[in-house]
Length: 134
Image (cartoon, rainbow, N blue to C red; front, side, top):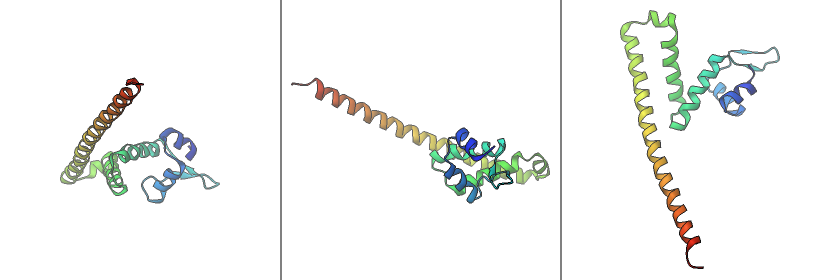
């Protein structure tokens, strides 16, 4: 699929998708004869991983590391050839990403709770001012 279709499906801008290509996070699987980027479902899945990591504050380097880990584990041929120790190391690294994600989600929940309390305080203040003496 063309980059515009990918942008619509992932809710990422064309510029962002191009940037991820330039930095090597998600390269298009092919190019058309005219040089246009062509993406597969697997490419879209990689972009969705990045899209989910971004609001959690992961760096581009961390995103690349996680994609590398999952690529190695998902590649059935390579996974079968991995030594048990190497596979365990990859799984441990994946586990650290999972833990970091859980911690970052909790931090966002705390921030959201504080923001909602603040919004409620502002609403109460506004209501008091509009319901007060005229």
